[in-house]
Image (cartoon, rainbow, N blue to C red):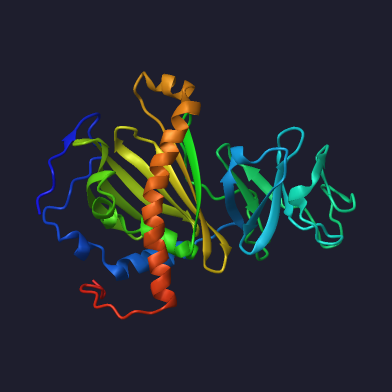
Length: 326
C-alpha cells in the first residue's frame, strides 16, 4: 500500500545520519528479542531511589496524596515554596494527611491536631523531595549505597516551552519503556501524528530515528531523534537534527502498585527561530495544546502497554516470525 505523499518544511535533519541502503519491513526490524534485550538493559540501570510524582505545578500549599510503589505519600510546599514529601498516613491513628492543614511548613492532622514537620514521629519521617523546575520527584528508601543526592537525569534545554501530562495504565513500568523502545510502530499505530519513521542506527544503549511529524494534512516537519534510558523508569527522546534541535521528551513510568503504572511525560520544546521568544511568553496558552497532543498519543500507547501486560498475565502462544536472535 502506497502512503500519501508528505510535504516537509522547516530546517532539514542535520545530524549527519543516513538511512540504511536496504531496509527490511518494519515488522521484521521490530525484532521482539532485540526489544527485550534493550528493556532488560534499561531495567538494570541504577535509579538512586528516585521516582517522578507529577507536574510540579500540581503541588502547592494544599497537601496532595499519591501512591508510589505501593506507598501512600503526601506532598505539599513550605512557605518558601520548597517541595515537601512524607508518608500519607498520620502516625497517631492513620488519618489521611491529604486532609491536613498546613501550619507554617508543617502538617496538622485533621483528626487530633498532631503537628508533623521536619523531624520523625515514631516510624513516620519526612522523605527527600526534589523540584527540577518541571517535575516533582520523591526519593524512597533504597539499599545502602544506592541512594543519590538528586535524580539521574538526561540533559535538558534551557528556555524551553514545557508541558506535562500524567495518565495511569494497567501495566508494569517495563511495558511503558518497551513501547518507546519499539519506534517501528510509530507511523503504523499513530498515522495521525507520524507520516513516516525510519530507524537509522541501533546501539545497545541508544536508538537513532528519522521521523516526520505531521503538522496538518500532508505538511510535516522531519527531524532526527535519539531514544535512550538514563534510569530504569525513564526513556528520553532528544531531537538531534532538524527543526527544534535540542528539544526533549521525557517519559517516566512510575509504579503505583502491582500492575498499575503512572505515565508522566514532560515535553520541553525549543527553537532557534527568532519568533520562539514570543512562544515562550505565550506558554500559558500554548501548553494545553501541547499536552492534548501528547495525551492523544498516550491513549493509544497505553493500550499497547496494557496489551503487553495482559499477554504476560494470560500467556497466549504467538507465532512470531523473526523473533529469534540475530
